[in-house]
Image (tube, rainbow, N blue to C red):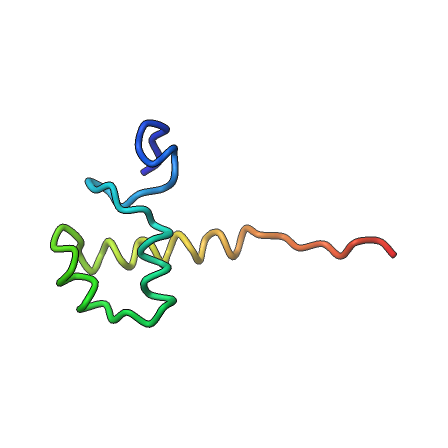
Length: 69
């Protein structure tokens, strides 16, 4: 969900004020899914998977073009 009134419009996990990027940072740092769920009881496995799906979508949408030499 993106709402300019919450975290200046950063995507957040539905029903929370947890930024998607925060959850992705935890996963990238090696946090286990079970630990994240224990530390943030409002989250579900589906929420974490939605964060990963969002990251995958962004990676697929990103287009890198080489600069002309």
